[in-house]
Image (cartoon, rainbow over all chains, first blue to last red; front, side, top):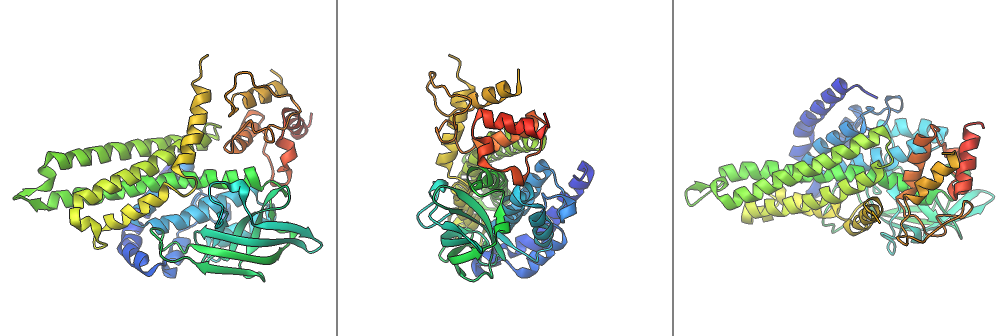
Length: 379
Length: 82
């Protein structure tokens, strides 16, 4: 793992990169519904795509706290670009790092780092969201390997991915498979008309009797739920938590400038106490969200078993704060907050998504409540 | 405490069933009985690796290894070469 001086330098460089290469193009990506390939290539050159992975696999070796701070820097500039890192580094990369075979790690991770292979995580289905155990994509074992059939939906970067981690069910077991995009029977359909994540290449993936070799099973057959999926979503939630901080901070950055420049009644609107109330709350809530994320990051670094629930708490709170602060930012902008000429319009849409992906807020509340009912019970 | 005692205590402290009278045997499948939630699996991995200083490999991710107190205890003993 990189030492803290190096990691701080990486962070500062990432901030400058985001300012120069990402933020000026965020609106263009949103409107075109695609990230630019040249940006992905530049991010690969910087080893940003799998920033949390060890250097021996082509990553930056950022520890969890610095990886979070890095995620915030990218996420402040563009949510879809942050989403690329969430999927490559957290959902797919970390899952393969922990549960992939030596061959999976050696073959896939360096290619993901270099941007030559994009991965996507395929769990959600048309009829299956929160209830992951209910997946309807099936697999069966044959003499040629496994045969998968079904339909996945909402796979971020599914539209440009070279391979997918697919969660599928047999009669009794749920397993995770690496499925190559160019395998016979695989079709992807880009999803249109999205509220948010418009440049995240979100796609449906149709699997029609797709044959995958036995060696493409991640972990052991039957370990897809809860182990592979649990690991992927735990890393995904951590990244999304920081994505929430990023949206909230980007909203503050925008509304502070606007409130100091916009004049009404011959007065800068930042002089009005009701606007100050909004900004005061936004700063306080965003600092609190970041503090929860940093705490979760330290626990993850220690591999403390409390890290899982603290990550859930951070994700729940940070995504909620992102939505609240984005709503307030639109309010400060007034009519100008309702048009894409200003970034808060996009941030408002993106914030909502964070309360849904990697586990809805309501599921997070249930899990946190379960933890609280155990931890604080004094009969 | 023995290894099995520590495993049993960890599971007891993470039950998602809030009936004070609930109990489970060392051979009971805690997942099939619905005694733990979906976060528990990742916590269990962190617990085993941290508490017993072992690294669970992908080739060992057989769900039977982690289904009960006895199975987890056997897995840990095997890993530690006892």
